[in-house]
Every structure is written in structure tokens, then in C-alpha cells.
Image (cartoon, rainbow, N blue to C red; front, top):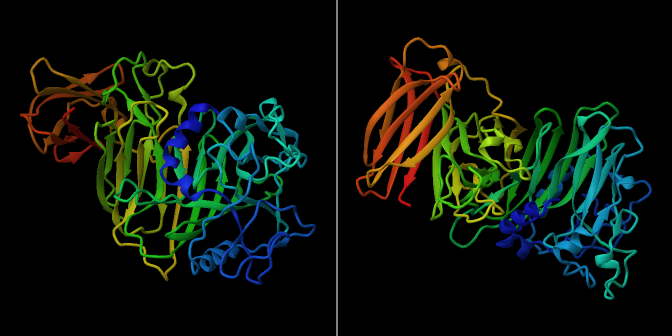
Amino acid sequence: MPKGLMDRRAVLMNAGLLALATAAARLVDGTGNAFAQGAAPTPGVPAPAPAAAPADAGEPFQQDLVRKLAEKLAQKPFAKPSVDVPEPFNKLTYDQYRDIRFRVDQALWRQDKLDFEIQMFPLGFLYDMPVEIFTVEGGRARSLKADGRLFSLGPLITKNPEAKAPDAAPFAFSGFRIHGPINRSDYYDEYAVFQGATYFRSVGRGQHYGMSARGLAINTARPGGEEFPVFRTFWIEKPAAGAPAIVVHALLDSASATGAYKFTIQPGAATVMDIEMTLFPRQAIAHVGIAPLTSMYLHGAAHRRINGDFRPEVHDSEGLALLNGKGERLWRPLTNPKKLQTSAFVDRDPKGFGLSQRDRSFASFQDLEAKYGTRPTVWVEPKGGWGEGYVELIEIPAEEEIHDNIVAYWKPAKPLEPGVAHTFAYRLHWGEAVPVSWPGARVQKTFVGASRKSGVYLFVIDFDGPAVKEMRDLPLADLSASAGGIGNVVVQRNPEISGLRVSFELNTGGVELSELRLALKMGEQLISESWLYRWTKA
């Protein structure tokens, strides 16, 4: 795993995850029997333990088992898991952690000629929360055991005199990854990862990891600090031969809520995840984020606060795309502000939202290693009505690209109350673009620069798409600003993109903030998505 990805996850988890994440708990089914043999649980509190050896026959697994476990667990106080890990495994450095390697020949189902293989991550470094992992086959769940049969220990560990029991290491799992022939029929590439709190990420064909998703966000960017729920147990169903998708169940736990999750994951040109989740609050949760996405924006053509970087742009995502309940399409370029800022896009029954990487040109990034042009766009497609609420966008100041500083999610208008099951279903698309056809024009690129006049800024917005590719007459630029003055509005053809370019100047007039809005119209008909931008004083 690239060091940059590890560091970026660390930034997000340090505030809350390390306080919560120290072990996985053994949970019991409705009969009181543990799924694997081990110490008996304390009444009312799940008993902590590392993953146990698989039982010969396993335990029965029904599709509603995780929901029942989550509902039962919600009736008890949150119990912070704990586990004893001997030195040096309880304080591994980054390099030592990377020296624990999964034995590829031990990948789950490697000998079964399926299109899916599972490799596990060890416990250690920042990932100090053991998670239990079960495989489900023939209606029975079997627990996997983390030990030297699955992992090899490199010299950074074996030559350490404190490593007393290398054969037993690494003592537990911290997550897993899914491999399959997504790019080539003769090679199994990694395309999905579950590791750390409720973080998971994926890619489509030919892509590289970028942004992440989470199972749930609680109190993000709110006073008192964010609460980081955790996936403490996973059940991975063994796919049938020729199956196009794999099913993963997960049990969420936190101080405020428990939850049952089902992921149906189908890899392809765009990897698609169908997610069903049921939450059981332990207490009223006023600020909760459904389908949270986490990404990185350092600088680019739309907002350049970081100077001195030879690369024109550095970001995993460049904009927030929305399709609201009324069918209006919105595009909000991302920024890297000096102060944390939030934006709320009020809606009812949203049709979709996501963080998008529209620019795929190497020339825009000039980074041979990061390959930002191959990072996925992630689109959330709600299933059923989500009611009233808003999509919240959080932009956090960042000085380095190792920090994931962008968060977006759906915030329900009403708090989630205890004693009630709250169910949400949605589909995640990890691919090249937003998977919604659109005959109108879209924003292809946003450029922002300073004018020669003090307090005046130049905006240039390029539009492409069917609506403007071969139009005879130029449309009207419907433009507004909440503060400051707009001037020198120009609409012209841009033959380089077979589209249009709109430019204008914003005279800030000494204001600190101005909300800008632009759309293209032919007469009274809207022919483009609506471009939104928040200008703030540097």
C-alpha cells in the first residue's frame, strides 16, 4: 500500500479512531452461542478476543443475522474493545508494518477458480483495531484466524530481539482487500479495500485508488469532535462459480449507534456497490452523514492557494456534482480554503451526488507517480426516497496532499432517534464519470485568476456537451453574485473543446465572501448544469 495512502488515512483517523479502535469483539448469535470457540462473553458486554480458529462446521448464517446482532448490541452501552498485543507488535513503525506481508498463495478461494480472491491486512501501526472476519458458505459462517500461516514476517521484525513469538503474529486482522480479473483475464488485481474505522475504497477498470467512502459520519466538523464508528466484524459470502458480484456483510458499532450493512460489489469498467444499511441509534444523533465520501483537493485551476508546486493541479476530485430531487444538475468546484468551510445544498429525495474527477489529462497534473488523472469519480445514487435534508460539503484547509480534506454526505433534516430502525439504500459507482446521461452542457473546466485591478478576479468557465457542440446561436449566460459586482461578461465559442467559454470579472468591493451562480439559457430554457462557486478573501 503506498505510504501516501496510509498517511492520508492516518490524518482522518487520529482525531477519533485511535481513541476507539483497539480491538474487535466476539459477538454471539440469538441462541447465545459464539460463532467460534473462545472465552465466554460477560453478560451485557461482547467479549474481546482476536479472531479464532475456524470451527469444523461453522455456525448458521441467515441474511438477517447481522441486523439482529446490531439491534441487540444497541441495547447495551458501547464497550470499547481491547486486546493485549506483545512487543514489538503493539508499536510497529510504518516500515515494520509493511514488513508483515500476506502470503499470496494463501488468498481465500485461490484454488477454487472463482473471479474473486480475498487477502487480509494485519493488525499494527495505525490500524490497531482487530476485526473479526468470517467466510460464509452453504449457509454457515466460519471464522478466519490471523497467524504465520497467512503472513510472512520480514527482517525488520524477525531481527528485532523483542519479537518473541513470530509464529503467532500478527495476532489479528485489521481489514481485507478483494482481488479479481478486473483489468486482465490472467491477472487478479486489487480493486476494493475495507480497512480502518468504516473506511472503504474501490476503483474501476484501469484506475488507481484515490478517494474513499465511509459507512457513516457522525458530528463531522462539529464542536466537540467527530465520532468515528467502526466496522468490527465482517462476513464475506463465497460467490458461486461465474457470479458477477461478491456480497460482504458488516457490523458497525460506535458510542452513538450500531448498524447492519450489506455490500454487493460488482467490478467492471465502473465498479458498482449496492449498499443496504440499517442503523440502531443508542441515542438521538442530530448530525449524521449518510453515504459519506472523503477526498483530497490541494490546488488546481479553480483554486490555487498553494504556490511553488511544479504541478498545475493536485487533487483526487475537482468538484461536487449533484442531481437534486427536482432534476436540476449542479456543479460546485472544490477549493482549499484558509479556514474550514461548510456548504449545504438543501433538497428533498435527492437523485444523486458525488465527488468527481472530470479532468483526465496528464498535462493538467504532470505527476508520473500519483497519476491523478486515473482517480475514480464516485457517485451516490439513492434508492427510494430519502426525504428532506441536504448534501453537506466540508472543505478543510490543507498544506500537503497527504491530507484528505474534502468530505461530502447526505444529512437528514431530522435527527436519528433511538428505539427506531433507520434504513437507507443506495448504489455507489466508482468509475470515469457520473453515470447519468445528460443532453445538456456540463462544466468542463473552471479557471480563476487575479485581474490587474485590485479586488477584481477573472473567472473563465468552459462548457462542453451535446447542447453546445454544434449550436448555431450563442446562449445567454445567466449569472449572479450574492455580493460584489459582475462585469465584462463574454460568451464565445471554444473550438478546442467543441464547446463554449464564459468569462466574467468579479469586483469584490471589499467583501469577504460571494456566492456565484452561472447557467446557460436559450430563451427561458436551461441548457446547462448550474455552476456554483464560493469566492472567499484569501
